[in-house]
Length: 372
Image 1 (cartoon, rainbow, N blue to C red):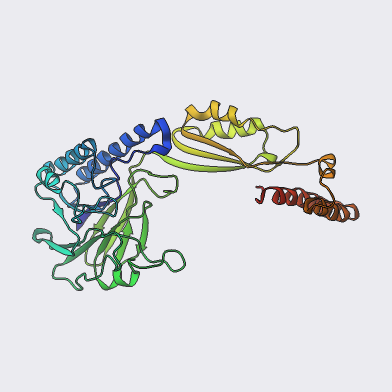
Image 2: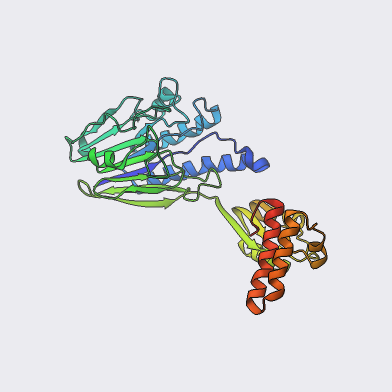
């Protein structure tokens, strides 16, 4: 049995300017999450830690970011845990290698660091061969191009950094194709680049993105994990995502037309969490006398979430007097007149549908957007 802990895309040193005065706190949390990931490796006594690129935010990390990384490599070395690392598209040096590689090796003398050319490294006592290659941003070929096929050991694992081809979604040059993953005949391919944990290929050619251990942007819905990989035999990799991240993101789209202020506040109070980044989008067609106190919401709930934002996309439901003000010679006025003619001859549920369509249509013609 080979036991591996796979993570990637830590991005030590990212400033998180979009978080304003919370940016420094989240930068420290990224560092704390890395410590938790390494502690997990030590606790589970894994045979190998794989870091699949972008340990750092850039090729010139700050001394603080470097010291955080050095301490964690010392921890792995002290525990006798092997480590493999590649550079990603963010932190690859001009020579295509990991920043401060010499310093990292001093912290962990057994560290294996792969450069921009495909390399192999055997671990004889594990009967394991690791194949790896650092990212080469802008390269026209797949990161797996030129990798050896077949194996000379019982176990074979690869580590690469790049995007996987998905028809109609991710296309172009320099992508990893699932066919290639099957052809290299590995027990497991550890991938970095995408910030959400995701399976790319199932057994026997198992390949996963670990995602970022801590959430980096609101789009990283699957972030916050490292992967525990247990390989019982050739082509028998079992992958278990383990949550280590602290921050989460939630987007709430709320129809204010169907929710009064008291219910809205109760809803937010129930979701309050100091580790949650929450975006609230208010939609709906509201009566003229209904005013959404978005500033009051921001003021009352900002301290109850890690980050709290409110966007008001609701529209005012226009009464007959307001609708009559659109001149009949305008497109809006003509639309209102035609809809009114239909409403006057309709009844029951159909009349309600037409009245709603009138309000939505006016909002679209005024703003170019469909109200929620």
